[in-house]
Image (cartoon, rainbow, N blue to C red; front, side, top):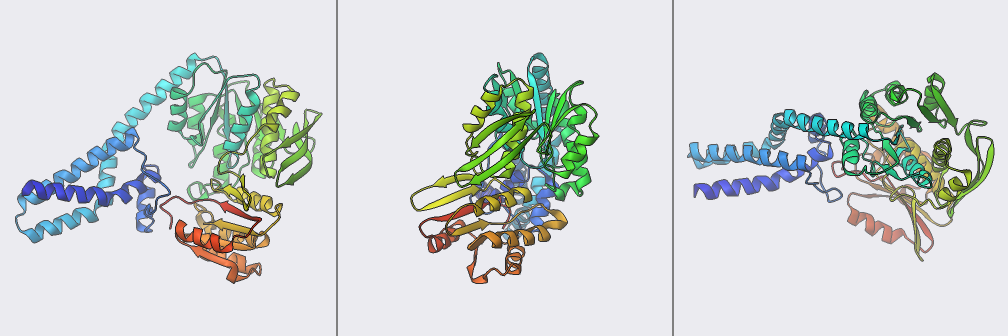
Length: 472
């Protein structure tokens, strides 16, 4: 009977732990962030995100469940009163987050050793290769710029890039160890949430070439100030190989500031009379057309990609491709063949409606761009969004403004989840939007029901951002 009780307790505990462990993983194994979400009741509810059983998570789960098992054994063996057993079992369940923290700190030294081993292995592998190494950082447009640049360089080189948005130290390390083979070029996307993150990545990759994309208030919750963001992005130019080259996308004041401060080999894009810029821009629902002025040469460009931000990313990528020896004809050809990446201003059409899937976008600039693109389409316009998060003290202001911008374009608004609904609603109303055309959906099922009610033939639906499960 004793063993049965212990087994039942452990099984119930495993089920109970699921949401906590999923939240812990979604928070990047960051205990501070995990407890913030616990206190804010932002557990990973729903099925948008699943547990990913990485080696690290498996190690964590084994130790975590062993500690829980030991506690259940102690409770059941040494406490005979059934009510005390029940009481202590409840305590264990209530302190599930604490057990996660304890397990995390026990494993931390071991995880650090594993991390150092793989990073050292990746550095050693990179050091033996005679390849072109390019680092890309910025607040917005890193992944798009990386993908566009890879398409251009593939005209002459065999290119390896960090997959998807694998832009952390371990993500880049994994790309080097698992994906890099007999390639000519390695492009590393470099992301950051804290000062020093880019310097760490630059010292890992040691790039000779770099691109700085648009810089703005992304991850302001962790960076605190725009100055900290600028200094962090500047860690890439300051840590490239001696004699290396940096291309700056000059469509933001912060990137221009870094360009002016940098003393090495540098090129500026997306400013009048700079090394590369776009003129005569025409954007419609079928794509974008413009003249690319590149090192004094005028190239006629057409692409399926939509929006000014994508045009700026194309211009910057073309500049780097040109610097690395790609011909003007090959640049034009590569751009023409570009396809929108999944969930980033991806247009999906059928005989009844058009969907603009921008669900992977989670920043202010990208949201404004998506709404600008939506305005180019004809038909009834429906925007589905949960707003933007991790905006720190600007959370309310950013989403209030976003609500107003949506109201200027949309015919109907569907606000998902609770985290920003009041800000978005108030912002839309402040632009004289009909409140009867604003809907709230706390689940995907409800969202689908509202869409079925609103959709008419020829309508256009923009899905803007998609929060993870730990946001209500």
